[in-house]
Amino acid sequence: GWLPQFPSDNAMHWHQFGALSLLLALLLSPSLQSLFGGAIGRYLGRISFVMYLFQVPIICSFTAGVVILTAGQSRFLVAAVAGASTIAVIFLLSSATYWLIDTNAVVLSRLSGRKFDALFPPDTARGRSQT
Image (cartoon, rainbow, N blue to C red; front, side, top):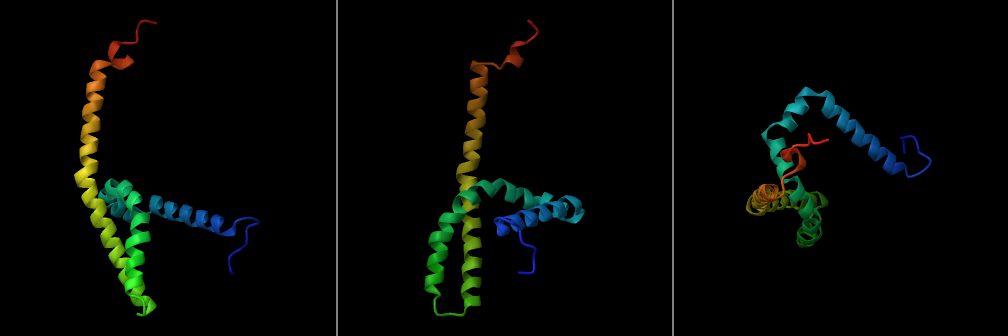
């Protein structure tokens, strides 16, 4: 209520402002850049697509089950258990899927691309000086 109101879709505008603020903080902070550019940040970048694919199904199934199983406990305990276990499951499943499926798919894709380029060389390989 203390934030200024936009004429339409107030929440969307403030979310965009917050996202832009986080991006600027990352771009202007050497310590944040080193944190996200380090080994952990690179690893999160590698598994980010798999995490994107798995997060909604896990939240809608696993997390819902955890919340149902812990019903009757304090809200803080339910949120802590559901949040921590969901993050752990998403990271474990994403890591396993990345190493077992995604890396092999990338290797196969690169091999197929090299075979395709050998059969049908790009214009730059044939030389474009005939103009």
